[in-house]
Picture 1 (cartoon, rainbow, N blue to C red):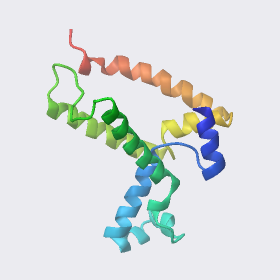
Picture 2: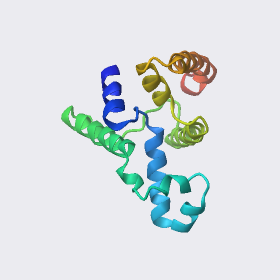
Picture 3: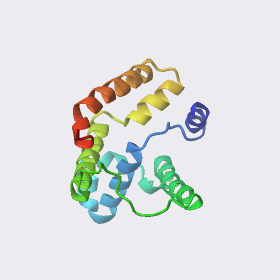
Length: 157
């Protein structure tokens, strides 16, 4: 994984992460649908000044590769289909609501933090950045804390 990240940094000038691709897709869609709003917005506008389409960014193509790679892998191993992974006692509606809510929190948090955990940890550690190592400890440490706090959503005794 480290070699892949170093190669990504060398060839594209960017590390690996997912939040930037979602940002680029959102910026591109807003530029297509609400051009004036997108150009005047203080957050979105600067990402459109180069004249290059956000759909030509490295992260956009990375996400396409992840999506099509997952579909191909699932098809090759006969696991392609629609399924909602959830605890036995949870309804589909509640699981989807929690997933959307968590996705919104992730999206907002990743933009406030200027990137997602995969970009911080993987790309940061690949270049021996202290913040990457601190981020790894924080991600897993808080992951254990939150898993303990929220396990009642998944596990009923």
